[in-house]
Image (cartoon, rainbow, N blue to C red; front, top):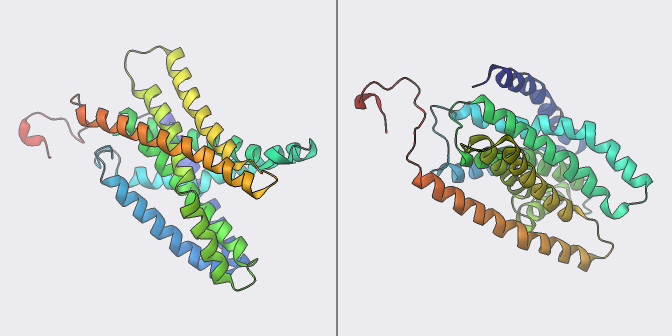
Length: 288
């Protein structure tokens, strides 16, 4: 555990929590119904995804990570990342708009700041917790950071489109959540998990050069960026939009499945040292 990264994480968390509270409160100001439903849906969504992740052997040992790690990931994704995106994304969107690149406005405004902001959090968190010491821990950490980001973003869009629905705020919120959850399931979870896998490989693979580590981390972050960029392209015709998203999905989801299988196999086959909360002086000290 690095003291510098631990302090950085604590400071960012202290900043991120008010940001999270602010955006949540704003949802209630836009639409009380949309804000309430968004809060409920987000809580259920986060709890369900975390439960599914805990079923995997890749889930870190609770003694070395635990709820603090989970909370740090979610707060970074839902709070710190949004602050960084607001600071870095809006100027880029304005620049792209002035250049007349309307087709790529959402791509540059989303993929550029969001993937960097989330990956930065994954790196800080991986260096903070001693129980995170395997490449697949980067995968899981990235997935949780993406989960936090996705939950708060879904809640925000749910509130915004609630007031735009001609029938009712309830209908608008339900429609928005259904589209975002089922039409593109776990987008931010996928993007950040892939970037986190690269960071996990770069940080926790032994016997590699610095150049190799930078290259691996950069390639996987770039892959996450390209997938996000492609998904956000604002095609002028609906059928082109559908085809474009489908093309990205046909690359993105199989790639995640492949990475997940590779990480799972490495995890199951791993028989090297493991983290223990106290020094082990006898077999009796080990708790299975």
